[in-house]
Image (cartoon, rainbow, N blue to C red; front, side):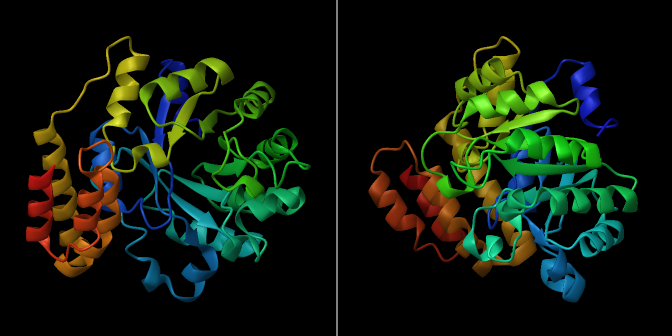
Length: 318
């Protein structure tokens, strides 16, 4: 990642990244977050086997927004040669390739993929080595603290990946068995950062600018990766950058927020058409509803939108 993350490190700029989120971080969403200051973005996770046998089904996931400055395709799989082949064939539109070794979903882990790879450090390292040998672009990895409370191995695991050629490690401070419950363990992120030479990003429980600043202060990490905190709140990236640069985080007006919602819907319509846009926007509208008066009524409206006019009406309710 020398040609990418080192630019940030040399300038002492902390990296503010939008995390890859299945079913959420498509190109329109990433483009909006990038416009508000996300330095680095990742596609939704893409199956290497799916790409091998049916790449057409993954085309929309792999789209890149023109707003994205630095964007990675995130792959998941457990076969080093397949992962390397797909990375080589499809890496061209991206600045780097990320490997998902953190997803806790049973449908992923039952196939020894995602966070299940944390139980097999040698296979994980073999995947990284195969991919770094296959492409000239950086290969990075997103991991968790471990598989469960009795196997917290993020430090040893990350060191093995670094030795295999990983250019950056993102650490979610929860083990797989926690899924998204409890609190992220900042201590394990700090331990990984203290042991590695490559950049380390901290992930977990960043819901506001203060959370990001606290994670950086407590772990020394090179940047943060924001996931759920950006749902319905793309403004968080500018707010984090403001705080880290000594400025009071900007508060957005209701009219500005409504404009973002409509822009989001329009961007989705251009790719998926109005009907599919409405279906995709339902969950986003529920997130955009957070913090508003009458949130229950807003969510009831959100889950029933069927076209662009419904979304305009939703905005009038805010």
